[in-house]
Image (tube, rainbow, N blue to C red; front, side, top):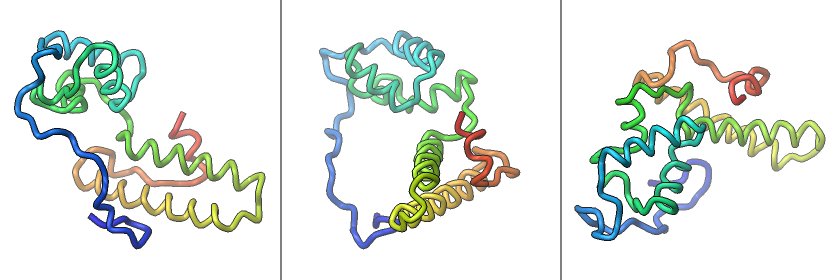
Length: 151
């Protein structure tokens, strides 16, 4: 897939090994892994952080091979809700950082453009998530209310 706001094709990058079963040395107990996911989520970790912690501390290289579903699907099944999806929240945090930077550096035209691009990504993601029912239809990105949404 092509990059959204540049001329690059975006084809390079590492890929996971194509395996159907978890390695023999890894933690293969499905119930224990689900409990760890719920515990780490309760501590306030994002899904990406949960995956990294499981990989580094608990010898679970790929949660999907053990449980058969993604970390976010496990959280949804156990009624652990989040207000905004992780990718959208990361974009909103980035936009907030750019806004703070532009408040102290008024003439920074390059970062003003980056803020416009970041906000367009947020709006595009919000349309997608509204269409799929992941966020409320009443959600609207507003720059002045962004700090309240990010918390």
